[in-house]
Image 1 (cartoon, one colour):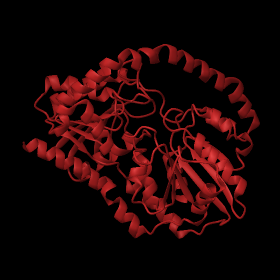
Image 2 (tube, one colour):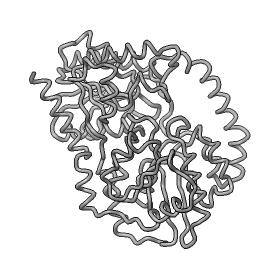
Image 3 (spheres, one colour):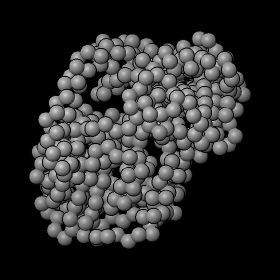
Image 4 (cartoon, helix red, strand yellow):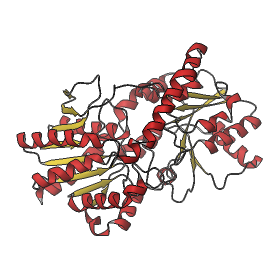
Length: 441
């Protein structure tokens, strides 16, 4: 079979959608299928290339590929001169540019920041459709712009089946809207409904997302399927194997690691920092260290309250390479998750957390509805703490501290039993079964 995937972010870009669809595309290519991907171009990358059997076409005008200077490094840099340079020049410049961006372009673009990619993506997609006979076309969000490309080509080649894959919802993201929701609320809803009406299959990652769409578009629910988060074992297994061969350097230090992007509106570190600072007051026989790996942009004010703990007990590493993040995850004594306060969004790293077998401290708003709490309910070394029920009573703090000090990783055998249905080979087959069924009928 031959597949065309329209996915704004793709390997080597670092994002949940890029990881997921690169793994699926490579599984299909390995099984002998022809796979073409249309994605966004970034300066420094080839416009066209073949990676692991997948034909990649990068279009549009992107920024330079790689990490840029970020304000979180204010707390982690040791060089005073570089620190002063960032404070005096880079940080004010970034702030000014952000203000200009927020009051102008961000207020006007639709459907999202990738809107300028729609036309070049459609042109390339249309050219490929005229060149090859595809059995299926897949469009991926976030961003939603990819699905508008799908709507455009469906008008031209309606006979080719179309699968819509939704990582993050579009029209009902009230807390983190992807555009000017006050201006475009009605249009957002109508556009997403049009996608559901036109698509042949819609895939989402959680049951709660499916239920939310059932409320919005009840007539389309027969075409909606849940395909869970993906774990790319090949990325993690070498780090796990290396860790198992090594002895821990210092049993008196417990490294707690949070990986991911923090958001003030949906994933704030406020409660975690409050808990950790209180734990430091009662812990005696071990040293606790809390590491944040990923962007903290927008949450700096929470860390400023604990300035005296930075680089002593709390460490901010900012964005790092994927390999560094995976190594930190595997080397950690305990992993920390902050659940999204939107029930239908599951942090993509949760499956990777489970694969390490490490204990997980999970902080959520509501354990009954939070997607990460529901996902971890069968994981034997997870401690879920509700923010609304948390108090600074000594008994509760000691319960948390006891979990941190005494919890041990689960066996590799138990890990494999838990994660088999999240492996890339399993997920790729789930999609393929849907596609084959659709092509037959």
